[in-house]
Image 1 (cartoon, rainbow, N blue to C red):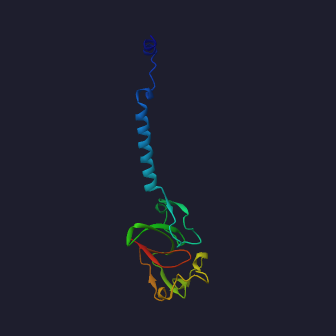
Image 2: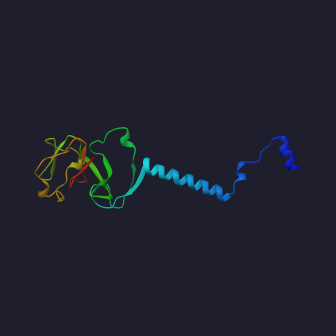
Image 3: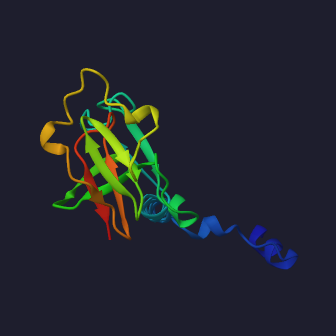
Amino acid sequence: MDDEMKRETGQAKPASQGKSVLREYAEALIVAVLLALVIRTFVVQAFKIPSGSMLPTLQIGDHILVNKFMYSFGPIQRGDIIVFKFPQDETRDFIKRVIGLPGDTLEIRGKRILINGGPLQEPYGDPGPHDDRLTPTDTGSALDAGVRVAKVLGDPLQQPCFLGS
């Protein structure tokens, strides 16, 4: 009798009664996984710092979230910390600081970084009195950052690496 009254009064039964609980959980899980993949691919991704190349700025074992769409709105700037695939082994992610921009000429002299002939004037630009990661073999010739290449180093500035396309 109740069913007849509901039909006559135009009340419909809720949509959730038509789906099984298992189906609702499956749909929610699929939506959650798809949303997580989209966010991880296009918006933000978590990374763990594996080495001391960015000490003291980033400590070994630190966890960071990387904004993946920031450079859609503007170019990379000197001083930005970026994550990129290592050119010789794309299974490895590198986390480094940008010091040279396209068109810059970079030179390492006596553990000092020169950009376009002048010293890098940033707090991370001084390797410090006891930092021996910039060795005499790294010094000398000027490096042209090219047209579409950024120059990146760890903190305190150490072994150079070109990032380009």
